[in-house]
Amino acid sequence: MGVVDPFIVGVLENEPSWRWFGFTIDEATEGRATVSLIVDSGHVNANEMTHGAIVFAVADQAFAMAANTLIPHAATGDAQIHYLAPSRLGQRLEANAVTSWADARRAVVDVTVRADGEAVATYRGMARATRRA
Image 1: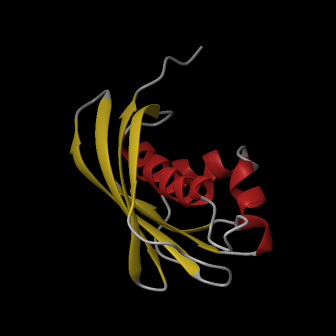
Image 2: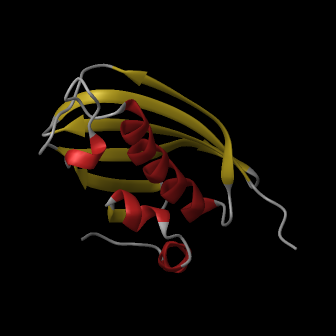
């Protein structure tokens, strides 16, 4: 495992969905993050391909981790994904997120999702600072 920002460690303690999906947070620091997942039988559709929602979820988790290293408590303001190729049961999905622009309240993060090293999707999201009570 690479470096994981202490804020992200705290976020993950209160976010059960990342465990439910089976994600591993490999890195999350300085506007970058890497999240991985081994595709299991609960992640595939009737076509025996990884369900698009799972691919989106791993990309979105990497996006969120990268954005939150720069803007704590940020939330998704907008996201778009392009599916390039299928992935399948047993493959390792890896989402690599890199912040391409940020200010004090917003960040744009680009993510590439790969299956066993081959690109299967690109994702771009915009994070926004949230109001905390």
